[in-house]
Image (cartoon, rainbow, N blue to C red; front, side, top):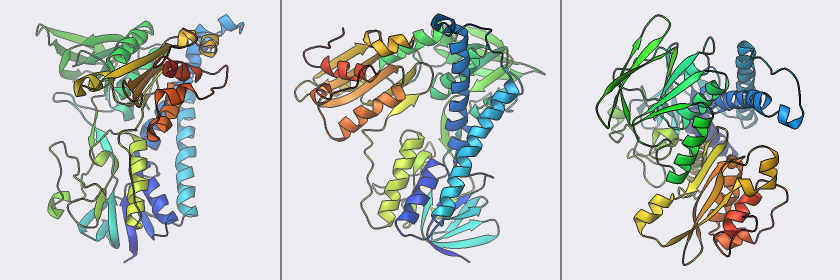
Length: 462
């Protein structure tokens, strides 16, 4: 029986990062993973493969719509679906092998198999039991479904099945207008699929800034996606080669049916803790199945910790990574910290959508006096040169102190641009601090500076 300072269960972004940091801090570390490859959902069937597909389909869109405008003439490329999937798989393989290399480099033992915790201080993998001073649960999440909707990963699919379809469907119904549904929906829309998004609420991307929601939906509609809002899905009937989706409109209770070659169920995710033995251990969980932890990520059972999608908070890979590093610091006797007020969110459609901090609606609800600095990408020379003038940068600052409270970007490279605002917020910067920082010209980042200027005397290029 092997003995470790720490055993981490799960090798996704939270788990593998925690393992590497623990090893770097001198702890004897093992990581349990039942998949054939490391990296969890994110690297294998989530963030990374979906970004490869988003990139490939965006390149097709550029060839079809913008190449000719730039004098790049010729026949539009045709889609070799098998090759596109192969490119996606190669991308995944390169990343998962990279994690394997990092485990070897940091002398982390990979305990292959599915783990359970028979008692505090012990982890069972297969027939073997390993001892550990501390255990970190980093088992991530699984797709959540709806009553009356049976997933077969062929016709009715989750994000996992949507990344491995045998062919490009002619029609697709996406249930849920959140991040996953819109990203994958936009991939297939660019590939020629007729995509209809059915959403229970009256706005897409729940929880985001209302102005961004409206602009984003308008842009996606322009790209060919159809939206049915305020619709409660009643069930999905699977036939031989297609499916029928029945929904009721909340406004008048009228029932409607949609036919589709493929149905993508994108109604969020739930913590994946099956088989760990939490109930027998007496570990407290919420009604939604999230493991309850204290300020140091420890459960109510001493020596057992939990991070990432398995606990409360946004289900984001980078949130899990932050917690992974922080819990490692705690286990090594240092001070681990995560600033939950500065965790960015990104939707990798085209244009990208990014946010950090509070929305305008949240600030209003709190009764804080605030000001809005907004700048359109139409005023940004670089964005216009790339046919990406749609969208804007919106910065929210405290009216009295000018401290940045939140930011929302929809436009080119939004997922990269948001981070200078994250750094500013981490240091408690004011909008003026950002406005007085020199930004290279011509770059799309100048739009961030202009939005910061708009919190003061006004932007230059608007």
